[in-house]
Length: 363
Picture 1: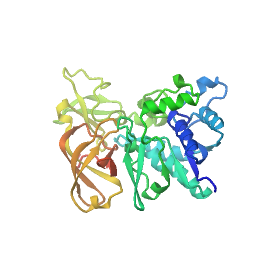
Picture 2: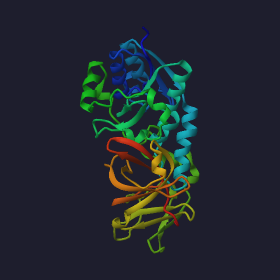
Picture 3: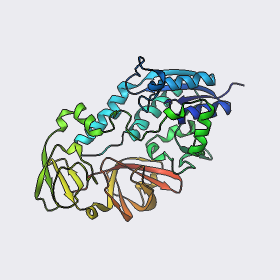
Picture 4: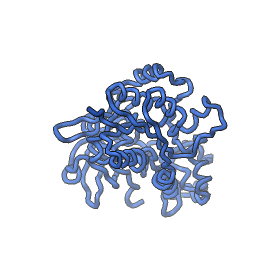
C-alpha cells in the first residue's frame, strides 16, 4: 500500500527541519519544497555562514536535512509572487499610513497557497509546515486551533488561510514545546548555534523597516506636520510611512514631555502625538475579513481577540456593522491599536476568524 504523500514547506529553519523528521517517522512519503521568496544565497560564502542568510530561505540547510532523511527536495522560485503580494503590499501599506503584517499575507497569498496548488497538481494527499498550530477534526469538519505551547503558538499568522485547505493541512509541531523541538533538531545534527530564531521581517536585512522603505519607495520621504491632540503644530516629520501608533523613539522633538504617536492621518499627511494614556482604545472596526464561523456576520458574540502576535488574547464583544465589517468592543481598553494589523478571534483554542484593523472613522 502506497504511503500518503505530503508536500512539506522546508524553510531550512529548525522547525520545518524537525517537522520533516517527524513526518518521515510517521510513515509519510515526504517531498521537501523550499519556496525561494527572496534573493538566492551567496554561494561564494562559506556554508556555515550561508545557512544564516535570510530567515525564510535557508536553502543549504533544507537540502542537508532532506539528504540526511532520504527525502526529495526541490527549490521553487516564488520571488515574483512574493514581491507582488507581500513586499508591494507592505510598502503600499506604510505609504498609506497603516502598519501591515507581511507574515500574515505571506502565509495567505504565497507559502500555503502555493503548497496547496502544488498538492492539487501533483495529487499529493497533504501539505505541511513547521508552524506551531493544530488542526482538530470534528466529524467531516476541520478547525484551526492554537498550539499546545501557547508561548510559541503561531495561529495568529494563519487565520487567513482558506477553510478548504484545512483537511489537507498537517502541523507536526502543534503539540510540541520548543525545548522538545530543539532536542529533536540536535538529533538531526543541525548546527544549533547557527540557527538563531529571528522575529525580524525576512526581507528587511538591516532590521529596520524604515531603511527598507526609504530604499524601496523614495517617495516615502514626504515631510508633514507633527500635531498635538488639539491640532497645534509641534514640528515636522520625514513622512507618515516612518511612524506607527505607540511609537515614542525617533520623533526628534524636544517637547519637554513624553509624546507617543497616536495616529497617522494619510489624507492630511499629519502625525498626531499625545500622552501615553491617550493611546488606549475601547473599540475598533475590522474589514477584509476571513471567518471560519459565519455567524459572526449576523449576531453579536463574545470572543477572545489578539490584536498583535506578541500580546495575549483579550475579551471583547464582536458586532456586525454592515459592509463586510465587524466592530470590536474591548472589555478592557487596548493600547496603540494599529490600522493594517490583524485582529484574530478565538473561542478557547479555536480560531474563528479575524480581519484587518481599520483607521478610526472620521479621522
